[in-house]
Amino acid sequence: MGIYIPHSKRSRLLKYKYSSTDKSLTSKYILNPYWNWLVTLFPLNMAPNAITLLGLSLVFTNFLTLLYYNPTLACGPKPPHVSLGGTWDPLFKPSSLAGKVDFRGWLQWLGLSAKGGTEIGGECAPRWLFFTFAAGLFMYQSLDAIDGKQARRTGTSGPLGELFDHGCDAINTTLGVILTAAALNLGLDWWTVVSLVATTANFYLTTWEEFHTGTLFLSAFSGPVEGILLVVGLFAVTGFVGPSYWDQGILTATGLISIVPSSLPIKDLPINECFLVFSAVGLFFNIASSTKNVYHTLPPSTRNLFSLLKPLSRLLPYTLHTTAMVLWLSAYPGEVLHTTLLLPFLAFWGVAFAHHVQLLILSHLTASPFPAWWKHPLLILSMLGAADANLKRVGLQSVVQTSPQAIKWTVVGAFGLAIAVYAHFVWEVIGDICDFYQMNCLTIKHRKASDGRSPAEIAKARKEANGGVTSASSSEEETPVQKKRK
Image (cartoon, rainbow, N blue to C red; front, side, top):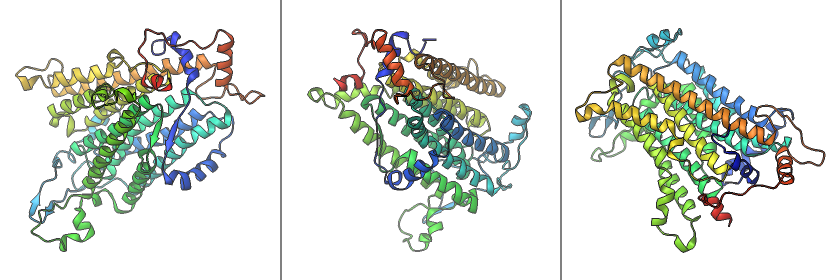
């Protein structure tokens, strides 16, 4: 214990105060009344974190059913995409291997079996599966939204709730991308990777912004609200029309291809790729909004573009990890990208991303400096894997990934190591916080006191009675939020 939260910094948890700004009209006028009703269905002896975990388990169940019915994330033949000037290939041409890879061998290696989606033109996953995706994701959003309300009902609000909530959100991000890739018929290809990069970038930017401002900002159109509802709708529509529907061009689907002048070099972009272009536009606006909010937290006397360099440098762990993973994939398109090894590779990517996010959130909760590089072991692992895979580009031989079998075991081993590192983080941090507050994570150990105080407030009073809340060492670097409070 004390690896991630030193004993000298535990008392900083008592200064934690949740702050958020939600400008969503959908939340205010539609979802919030529904959430207020939904939370009343849960008993007061059910812990808020248990509600969050229940929601995540629904999405994880969706993921397991996807592996069984459509592990290649694609089905049916890919139609030619036609522009007004003739045929053309999309930005990332669908791989001829994406629908042909045999996932059964990999599952048999694990002692499992799979159905459907293993041949181009083969049978797609049953339509009802996508309705379960819609229901699972919508219920995750609902349960994720009411955990804070349940915490206030039971008097268990505190930093553990935010850490647990963000951890589940980070894991759900990767699972949601894989489910969406299957619904859009993207397959085992670069478009699935691009969608993961765009989604995780949005998430990390929001977390980075919260670290510097102390406030979680949700715009009028945000990923946790409108973004999830859009994906829920996409799942539902796929349940009616099937994944192959999204392969047709947007001009063809809307009937505009017959009225647009043929002289215009307009490409009949597939509908599924239009969704990803939309995500890229959203990412651009999120970058601008987050950077602006962080910029305004800087001291007015030193506020300039150069003063942004330090906050921007804190995006480096995410940038390096993402770059390393893309380079790793690009070195083995035939061995990893266009095969079912992409799934454990993306799983490793997602767990490492969740670990990065949790380190950043923990620094925010404990008012600590930005996590040091040595606290990102999975970043180091991804960089080593990418470096080994790309040695051939400089005329050298890979040290570890010397054969297809070695590549497979390297990817699976990296995923296993990521699970171990993340599990250790969760065990250590949750254990430390629960020990400090004398509470449990998934059950309610103490109810509200007779005077209405929560366990967190009781813990604060107890610590103050025993000598007060310790302050940060004067030799430590102040965080942006600490400076702002002064």
